[in-house]
Image 1 (spheres, rainbow over the protein chains, first blue to last red):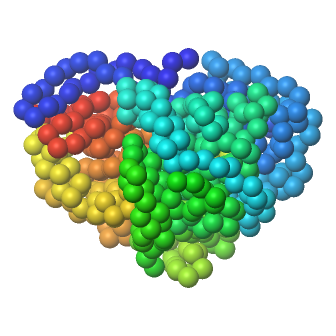
Image 2: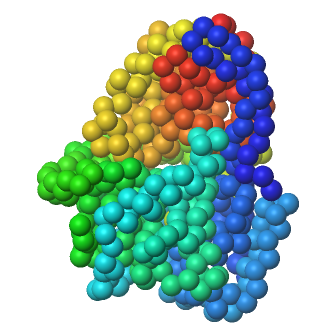
Image 3: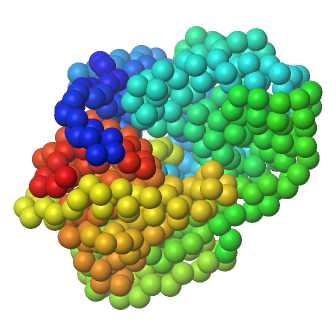
Length: 259
Length: 259
C-alpha cells in the first residue's frame, strides 16, 4: 500500500492561485489483535506493518522477545494484524489493564508509568562514539528522509551502529516510526544494546522509555527533548542529544562521550 | 507552574564545545478524574490546565457544553483535575468504553471512529474569508509562538474571528493545544461556528474531528494535512488549508473561499 496519495489542491503563492495535483501523506487505521483480543487501533503510515505490530507489543511490555510470538498475520487490505503469542507477559497484562483504565484516549499520549521506566536497567557500559561520527550519521539520516521531503508529513527514525544506519523507518507518528525500527530489530535479531537511535521528532518521556526498554545507550534527535526525557536519561545513563543538525547539536546528558 | 526549565547542556557548534545553560520544555503528567473515576493521564505543558481538562472531556464526547459541568478543581501541585459533571453523555460513555477496549495506549493515537466523525453535522454555511486575511492571521500566529522560539518544543493553536486571534494556546502536544483552545471557548461561551482554527502542527484525522465537533468551518495549519483529514474535511464541508507560511498556503478543500 502506498504511503502517499494524490489530491487536487489550490496552491497560493503571493497573488498567484494555481490549481494542481499534490501529494499528501496517507493516514491508515491499523488494528492489532493479540490472541484474538482487540488491543488498539493505531493511525500510521501503511508500511512495515509487521514490524510496527511487533515493535508496539514489545514497547507495551506484552512480549520480551520475538520468540514469544507464535504466529503473526497481516491483513493489509483490512488494516489488521493478528498476533498469536504463546507467552504473554503477565505483569505487563496487569500494566496494560491499568493503563487502559487510566486512559480515555483519543489523545496524543498516555503516561508511561515513571516508576516503570526507572525499573528499566541503567546502562552501565556506554558505547564510545565520537561527535564527528554522530554528525555523519545525522547527515545521512536527513538525506534519507525523502518521504518527509515529498509531503512534509512524516517522522523518520533509525538504528545505527558506530559506522552506519542499519534500520531506517518512516511514519506519520514518531512513536510508530520508533516501534517499526525496534520491531525489525527484534524480528531480525539485531542487538540494540550497542546501537544509536536517531529520530526526526521530539524526544518525550515515552520516546526515551521505548529506547530504554531496548537498552539503547545513545538517543539523538533533530528536534527538542522534554524536561522529563532529560531527567529519565540522566537516571538511566542514556546519552541524550537534541537539535542535531549539520555541524550542531546539544548534549543534554553525557555518559562517556568522546569529543 | 513554569512551561520551561533550565538544564545544563554541552553545546556543540562545529569544532567548538561550550558548556552552558539551556531551556527545555516541561513535560507534565496531568490526570483527569470525572466524578471520582480516573479517566486519563495526559502529558502536557502545565498551563491552562482547567481549559485542557474541559476541552479534553468535550473532545471525548463526555459533555456537550460547559453547563454539563457542576464543579471543576485543579490541583496543580499533584497534577490532577477533579471534574464533577451532572450530565454525562450516556452515548459517549459507551463510546469511551469501546475506545478504551480498542486501545492499549502508550501510543500517539487512538482511532476516532470514522463513522462517529461523519455523524458530525456538515457545515452548511461556510464563512466568507479572504486569503489576504488568512495570511495576516498566520503571520500574527507565528509571531506569538514565542515558547516555541525559546525551546523548539511546543505546538501552538489559536481560534480567530474574521479579524484577529481571540484565543491562543501552546502545549507540547498538538491535541492538547487544541483542547486548551476549545476548553477556553467553552468556558467563556465563545461561539466557534464562525471561527477559524490555526495550528502549528500536522492536521491528522483526530485534529480535524476535534474541530468538526466544534463546527469550525476553516482549519489552517503551518504543517501538512493527512489523507484522512482531507477526506473528512471534504465530507464535512470544512475548508482545510496546509503549509500556510508567509505569502504561501495550499487549499486542500475549499468551501466558499474568496480570493
